[in-house]
Image 1 (tube, rainbow, N blue to C red):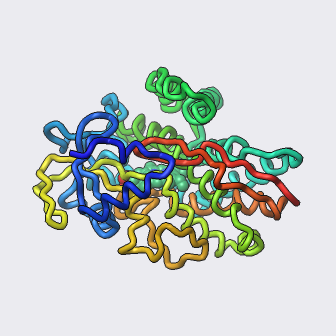
Image 2 (spheres, helix red, strand yellow):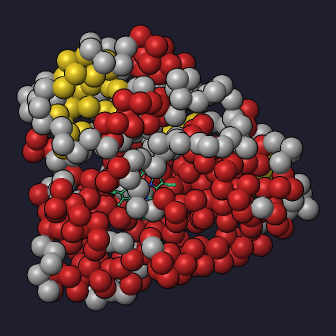
Image 3 (cartoon, rainbow, N blue to C red):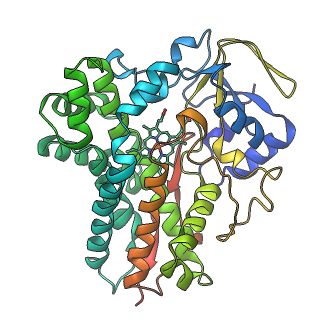
Length: 392
Ligand code: HEM
């Protein structure tokens, strides 16, 4: 059994993951949370297992024995999208789709784009600016609110939770304590308000589905939980890595400012290179499996390393090089298969618009990647700050 070091490494996890990837397709690890699991690192295995809903389940009830089963959640938050399979998953996925498709998607993007321009206009250009605090964090909150509009008191409480849980620990040593403090209690209050006070947009749609019997009370609370509290962190980290990587070089600057298509390609590469959500949600084997000769027993847990897969030399030429024009780029940073991120199209547009807003006002902005400190844990990773000199 491998101890947890490779999973704990945040500054540069890639050499450790590459060594494992070279040695074996799947290795038994002790997770930082304690219990063991299988870590799968090769691109083809990770991609195929993400799509395998016949032999794998995301429902922790299918876990058995001593293996890692993910966060322990109270019963009313358990039936979220990434913990249910098959027909229940299809029904929930359909019910949350409106902000991610068609006119709903346009509206969400418009709100966040306007906020990106407003935030950039408010930056002070005569001193170095931390783009994580000034852009990534507020834009992530705006995006989550545009997806799931909360009544005002609940939004205020959510913004405070996000600040304490995500932003404050980037700046102080005792971050873990702040982060852990009463998190579930605060979440429960916010969810209680969000599910009981009549809401607009997707929140109103989910409340209506509950009143019409198409969603149980637990399913309503669990979707609100998942759409609010889970995406905020990968989104902050994704804004951070995209701003860091796209603004670091000078070679493609004018193209990135003027061409949405070039920005899309570059955003994909930043997501591949720095994969903000490094691990998929736990998968539980429904039957005994053979992963290229490694035997996994029914009930055991698989951790699929999106970060390792995205640096696999079997799939990507020069995987440790950041190539902002890399195309095609079949990275797995937003998942694959039935549980792939429903906000994929939205995320690309939001990430791209943050760079466009900054470059349209300050076209010669520079950032220094070498100064970056990384933060995170074995599930996610992003820059604690991205210092920029804003230049017109
Ligand atoms: C760019 C930032 C984001 C990243 C890196 C990201 C990453 C991912 C990944 C990797 C998955 C698949 C996990 C798995 O298969 O185990 C996923 C699923 C999901 N994401 Fe995102 N995500 C992002 C933004 C968002 C946003 C903005 C939302 C909504 C507000 C969102 C909501 C979800 C939901 C609900 C699922 C579960 C889908 C399902 O099980 O059917 N994500 N995300």
